Length: 148
Image (cartoon, rainbow, N blue to C red):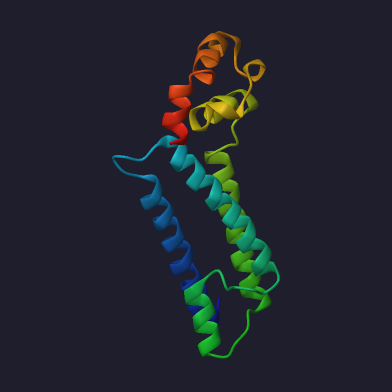
């Protein structure tokens, strides 16, 4: 890799590391719920897909340092840089998918119940939870607390 290719790569790395750091800060802390962390991770995985599709088209607007550096130099994204960033984004997305797999259908129902119990019906809830679910579902005081 030449010195000319190294500078844009470092600019990209600054952006991607800043994004990972932001994800870490949003998902970590004393009053953070696991549901919020899961949503943040899901959003980040979607962002990786979006960024990849943009980079493949030569668009680096998602990476402010890199985009600004290229604009200041009046340069465009080279094929080599695009391939390098694209490969990195795919690898990062694959790692996130392996480390944070999609929930299976049974667990997804439980997460939905924690987020919004009124989104599901009794038949979708595991049998051992159906009685309690129906009590909660028909508790108007609880509905008022959830929906304010």
